[in-house]
Length: 195
Image 1 (cartoon, rainbow, N blue to C red):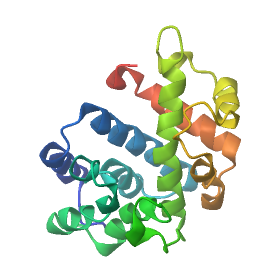
Image 2: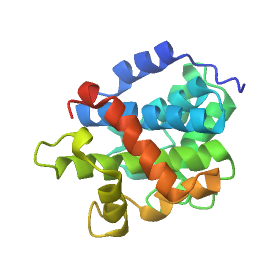
Image 3: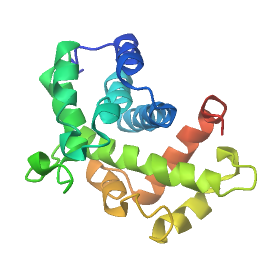
Image 4: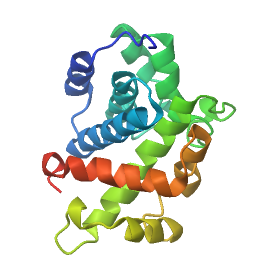
């Protein structure tokens, strides 16, 4: 098990301190849930993977108007809370190669958890958008076959980068299996998400 230096309780305290936006708070919880499901799938530590998902956008409220600082400002927040270099690097890695974060353009994801985090947090947007298209706006109404069609339709939820979602395969899970896993994960917390 990788030491990350932060418990889930500490992660939740950090969210309370740094994230006001309710949509971001939901996104963090969604990302945590998919990361926990991926950890189970791969036989990895659920807490390590879940906390990475829960904290990956811890600096978003501070950086959403200056995205060049996203994944940069989080480093001090996490270090001051006791996070290990492994957790900090994992969280920062979801910004690797992003043109809007010039400081991270040259970096590449190399570890399973890094590919998984980038893919999982991006997939949340596609799944939530799919649910919002349902007449009842419920996750339970989204079918896996419909989600797969929406993935192929690049005009749908166009800001969800399909290439990043497809990085799930570099983590070691087939795209169709990942879409199913993500959908089932979020359906399992639909009441909590109000969807």
